[in-house]
Length: 235
Length: 271
Image (cartoon, rainbow over all chains, first blue to last red; front, top):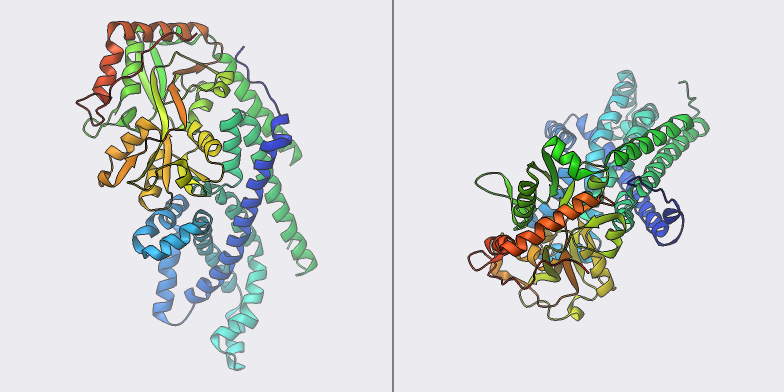
């Protein structure tokens, strides 16, 4: 008499389906914004980490250690609740009048992920023979230009597989945004559960969506590798 | 890959049905094991919160289930829950009773069984003093509450234009209010008073007279767990008769507490 009765119909159409879809869209938006920003920031930090200027290098090192070694959830709370004490009131009011929950989550995800991306890119750069840098410098390129035109294009290609991992992690980590009220996929699944008590159906749907999302990202990157970069899977 | 996914789903389904099937007669099981496991809040004073000195969970809800466990002749084990986890934990057999500021609602009653009402409160708003006079003042505003609560659903119904933001639990919603991230926190009267009483600058906040819903609390048990429901109902009716229920109310809400409230309800059998 206490057996769980499955009812998939509630999440395949109607109001609750719409909720899950809006949740998915928010997850996609949050992930997309953060992936792009994290990649750019990661590149910058990686270059800074390898710079000759000591303070710059130390700053990048401290950044990496700090953001890689503190829990993402704590960082999300920091940007959302902790920023209140630092920012002037006018800035706070403005942030709240926009979508601060989303922004705080995006900032946290971006910074957290950028630290991992920077390390992946750095290891990619280190795998490029150092003679290439020397050749570029002796051909008259500055350090930044050598990085930009010679080293990074090769390093990024080598870095693609670990980068995909970071993107996948980011997409999944975005679910933590629900703790500050961002209505993404997991949040909506929980909403459906608390309205219908059909938690198992809602979370199964969410699980499948994350799974599909991850598979699609992986497939797209593999496609990009093969078609654009001419890297073959086995390589 | 496909096979793996299928396997994963099948295992998950099997584990849920297996657990649910185990829960037959909780009263008999609890007596046999000598322990009753109750899900309670641990950050919702004065219903369930951690006492600063003893580091134990105490409160109105806890006193009720302590009395019930005593009548049953078993030991009481408390497990902290939040609004969004309490029902799944009950259904999966991790706890036997929910005593966690849970409103008796018709939707919930379809899935679990409730005891008679053991506490009566109303959904109100905690706001900065003087900022909210009527529901109009909340139109289009941001309102904070906790996930998985009836408060959230009531607020959306009462003020459709408001932006209801659900946090993991009430203290976070209150923190958002203190930081001007929301205009009001909405939930049951007494939870709001409890939040306010713990704030360092409590004079700046008030709980409005405005109310948008009745919130009768009930103890939640698994659907069809008739022996336990009957036992719990009998116990709390006895507690009402003996004056024990009123004593517990006075201990937490009465003239000598932070709340100075009068008890305006009586525990009676539901029609």
